[in-house]
Length: 299
Image (cartoon, rainbow, N blue to C red):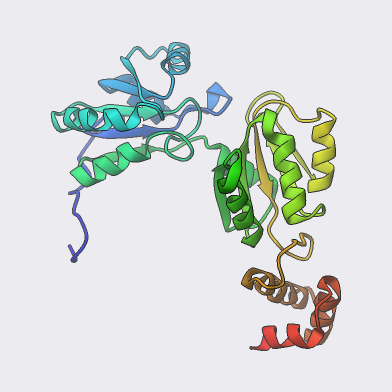
């Protein structure tokens, strides 16, 4: 191995559905539809010594539905750091453990990152059993282009929220957020204030459940719909990337503003406009000097 790297050894030889002694399994669970449980997830959860759960009651009902009878232990954001050392010792002693969250893939926006990092530091074998994730499900259903930025839940109030919104405004990419129903209106109002009313977004709600919906429109129309009680249940917000169809309110003093304009020129050229016409259109669209846009495009 090269300098600065760590060798965790070869992947242990295991049976088709067997588990590794002394290994940690990070297991994805359904985000709404029980049928999304994979064969491997069910097999692993049936064989481990214990299941570490964000909420033992939620996981208990899930395991009961699948006929899985294994010990369940609490591992959530309030006790995770206190429990990591003891769990590492159990893994070193040869126990096999699974980590699950209430829904989706642990560590993405739920507890578990600290435990996985501690296992890596200790040379303990970690395997992820992939599966449902609200982030990728919402992105796939939005139709927007990649790359994307996942924010999780925005800070609720204060300076951290203001800074996060400023960072959102600077990004040119598709951006994905989790949001609680009772905070949806305030978040959409902040989006309108920071990004402008015409930025396109998709509200993905009740994913994989009977009333699943992908609603798309402008930030303004989403805010109006939210004020009318249009959106219910769990939801993911997906902001469209900056592009010809997705103008953003960026500060002309920022590098992101000019990068967006250069990208727009390129996209207009790809659509068949001449270089000069693309520059003219972008300059008119954003009310900036055509000569300045030309210099930014041609260096």
